Length: 116
Image 1 (cartoon, rainbow, N blue to C red):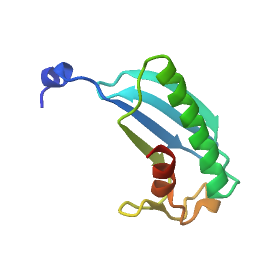
Image 2 (cartoon, rainbow, N blue to C red):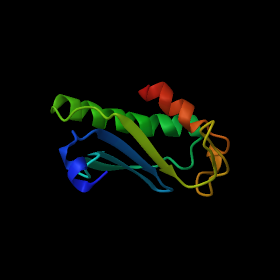
Image 3 (cartoon, rainbow, N blue to C red):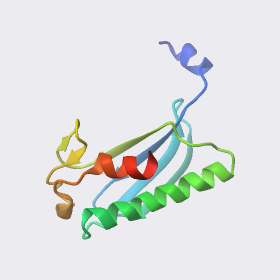
């Protein structure tokens, strides 16, 4: 696909989560590279996985509600970046170096439960 073909396509919205040791970046952008919203929230790194991912998910949900109200739209897909080995098929995070309490965390299942 050429750049010209991409520019003729309707842009699809995407939500990106970058879960780091101290902060989590959330970005709503599109497939043409335009960023609509970008926020950062503290990563609850010392907490067990479930309450921590609930806080991160709540921040993402708030961002999506704001964007929907403003007419920006809702994302077609969500992408997540987090340090540590991941079983891609099952979506399970293993022994993340900076999130020790998240060992064997069912990241994919939890996010699918929240966002569908």
